[in-house]
Image 1 (cartoon, rainbow, N blue to C red):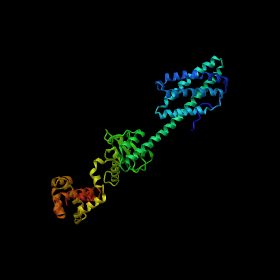
Image 2: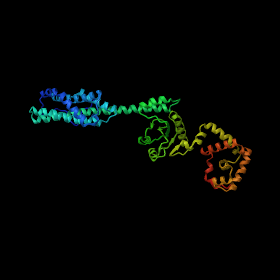
Image 3: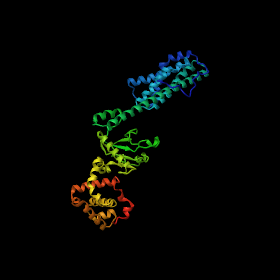
Image 4: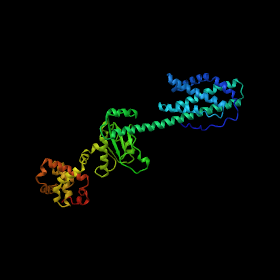
Length: 419
C-alpha cells in the first residue's frame, strides 16, 4: 500500500526548534485532550454526532488518538515520517468509501479536531512560558499533521472508490452476461447477482442493439438511461433497459440525442428472464436495417415491424416461398413483372377492390383492370384460393422490402403506369 507524500507543506523541520521535552509533557495529556477533541468533533460535525455504537466510537477515538500521537511525535522528532499513522488514516479513508459515506465529513472532522487540539496544546505551551516563536512552530507542526493525515485519508478514499467502481462494473457485466446468455435463466440466480451489483430487478426489460461505429470514443458512449446495463464492447453493442415502457424511454428527446445519430434497434419488451430473446430480435432488426429492409437510420422498434421480422426469421425458407408463390410471374416480360407484382399486392391487401387499388397506385382503374386480366391468365383460379392468397402476400411483401422488385418504384415504371 502506497501512502502519498503530503503536498503543500514543508517537509523540512521548522527553523525554530521546539524543545523535545515538550513532547513528553504533551504526551502525558494526550488522553485528556483526546476526550475533548472527540467531544468537539461530535458537536460540530453532524455525521459524527449520532449515538455511537461500540465499533463506531472506537474508530472515532482511534483516529483522534492517532492524529494527536503523530503531532507529538513530530515535536519529539521533526524529521519523523509517521508512516504507520498515515497508513491508519489511509485505511480510515478506505473505510469511509466502502461504507458509502462522503469524504467531506472526515475532512471536516480533521479540521475541527486539529484546530481544537492546537488550542488545547497551545494553551499548555503558553502556560509553560515558551517563546512566541516556539508557539508558532507548534502551529506549523499542527498544520503539517492535519495535512498529512488528510492526504492519507483522501488517498485511501480514492483507491477504495476506484476499486468499488471497477468491482461494481464487473458484477454488472457478469449479470448482463447471465441475462443475455444462451440457455434458460433462473430468476433466483438473477436476483442473487443483482443484489451484489446494486441493481433493482425489474419485471420487464428490453434490449437496445446499437449500430457499430468507427467514430472516436465519445461517440461510442451509450445513451444515458437510469438503471440500464451496458456492454459497449459487444458486437453489436447492447443496452438492457429496465421497465422500457416507462414514460419517454425510447421516444424521448434525451434518448434520441444520446444516440448521437447512431442507428439503433429496440427489441421487444419481455420478462427479465427472457432478455436474450429481446436481444436476438433487436440484433435481427439491426441486420435488416443495414440491408435496407427496415429503415437504415434512426430508432427502429421491433414491436412496429413484427411481420417483417417474422418474414425474415428463416430466410432460406422465405426464398423458397417467394420462388414457389411468384413462379407464374416468370412468364411475364421482365419489364412487366414489377408492375404486375405491385398491382397484385395492392389488390390482395385492398380486398380485391379495384378503385382502392387505383387510388393506392395512383393509376386509372382501367389500368388496374387490364393488369388484373393479365394476372388472371398467369395465376388462374389460384388467385381466389385463401392459402395461395396468403402465400402471395407474404412473398410479395418480402420481395418488395428486399428490393428484389425494386423496379416497381423506378421512374420508368411510374412514367409507364398506364400500361
